[in-house]
Image 1 (spheres, rainbow, N blue to C red):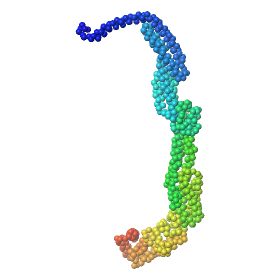
Image 2 (cartoon, one colour):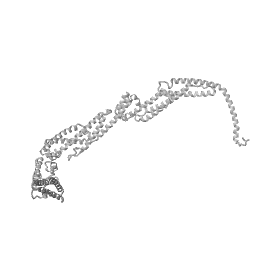
Image 3 (cartoon, rainbow, N blue to C red):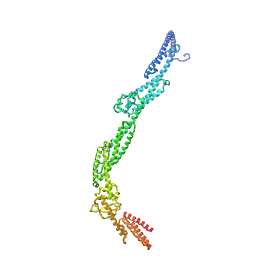
Image 4 (cartoon, rainbow, N blue to C red):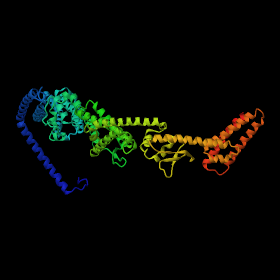
Length: 630
C-alpha cells in the first residue's frame, strides 16, 4: 500500500505483520486437532453408536410405560392422570435432550439419522395433554377457590363469568382432544359446576330460611354440616359455612325440587312483607274522638271512622289475595288470624257508628226533655243504655288502638248488638208515640221526626214553637204573646209581617198538640170574622177602596175586589135583560177600579204594598177580561 502512495499507520503495519504469524499458528493447531480426531474418531463413533442403541431401548421402555401407565390409562381420576402427565413429561424432556444430542452426533460423523417414530407420536400426545391438563389445573384451581369462599360472600355473577371463560377455553382446545375421555370429563366438570351456579344463586337469596334448607336436605337426602335445628337468622347459621359445604350435597339430581323450594322462599318472603305491612299499619292506628255537648268526648269522629273502615276493606283485600296464594303455608294461621281481626274490627266499627247515631238521636229526646216524662219506661231503658255507652267510650279512651279495642276481646261484639237492640226498642216506642201525636194534630205530619221531637221535647216552653210555625201552617211565621201573660197568644203574624189579632186569645196549656189545635181553629175563626167584616165594608155604598185595602190584610183585600167584581157583574147581567147600558156601566166601573189600582203604584210604596197592588192589578185585569167576554 505504501508503494502506491497510501499512508499506512505504524500500528496497522504491526498488526498486518502479526496477522501472518497468527494465521500460521492456527493452521498448525488445526493440523494437530485433525490428527487427534483421527486418533479418537473410532472410539467416539463406537460410543455414539452404543449411546444410540441404549437410548433407543430407553425410549422403547418409556413408550411402553407411557401406553401402559401413562395419563391416558382408562379409568384413572383426572388428578392422577395430571400427576402422571407431569412425571412422563419430565422423563420425555430428559430423553428428548439425549435424542437431540445423538442426532447431532450422527450428523457430525455422517451416520444415518435414527428416527424414533413412536417417540414422536408420544411427543404430539403430550403436547395436547399439556394443553388439556393445563386447563384442568386452571379449572381445579378456580373451583378450589370457589369452594373456600364463605357462603355469605359468594358472588355468583363473578363465578358465572369466570366459568364462561373456562368453557370458551375448553371449546377452543384442538379437535383431536375432543374424542378423549379426559376432555369429556373436564367438559362435564365445567358444565356441572356451571349448571350448579344458578341453583347457588337461588339458594343464596336472602329469602331463604332454615325451613327451606331443611326441605333441600329432605329433597337431596343429605344432611348439611351446619345446624338447622333452631329457627335463627340465616346470617348467623351461615356465618362459618363454605361453598364446599353446600357443594357436597347432590343438588343436580334434584335440581327441579331445589328450584321450587327457592322460588317458594321468594314468594313466601313477599307474602311475609305484605303481611308485616298490614300488621304494622294497624298496630299503631288509634281511634279518634269528638266532644258531645258538654258531656266530654263521648263520640267517635264519624268521618275518620268511615275512613278507617275503608282502609280495613283495603287491607282485607290484600289479606284475601295472600290467603289464596299457594305459597302461604308458613303464614296461613297468622293471615287467618289477621283476617279475623280486621273483619271483626270493620263489623264492630260499622255497628259502633250505627249505635252512636241512634244514641245521639235519642239522647236529645230522653235526656232532659219533656218527652222523657211521657215515656217513663223507655226513658228508664235509655238511661241504662246511656250508662253502657259511657262505659264503652271510657274503655275506648283507655285502649284506643283500633284492633285491640274492637277485636281484642268479645266485649264490643257482644255489647253493641245488645245496645242497638235496646235503642231500636226505644226508637220503636218513640215512633209510636210520634204517630199518636200526629193523629191528634194532623199538621204534625208536615214536619220531620227530628223537628217534631224538638217541638214535643220543648213543649214546656211555648215560646219555642216560633221556629216551627211555618212548617205547621201555611203562612204563620210567628205568634205574638200577651205582654203580661207569658203563655197567652194574642196575634198571628204572617211571613210578610201582616198581623191577625185572635178573636179569643189562646192559652198554651196542657199538651202542645192540644193548644196548637186550638190556635189553628181560633186563627181560622178570627180570619172568618175579618172576611165577614171585609165583605160588609166593600159592599157598603160609601166604601173607599184605598181605605179598605190599607185596613185589611192583602189576602182579604184580594177577596174584597173579587166580592166587588162578582156583585157588580151579577147586577149588570140581571139589568142587561132590560137595558144594555148596565153592561157598559159595569165595564166602565171596572176600568175606573183598575185605573185607581194602577195610580196607587205610582206612589212611594213599601215593598210589601207594591207587591200587594201589583197582585191586585193582575187579578183585576183577569176579572175585567172575563167580563169583556160576557
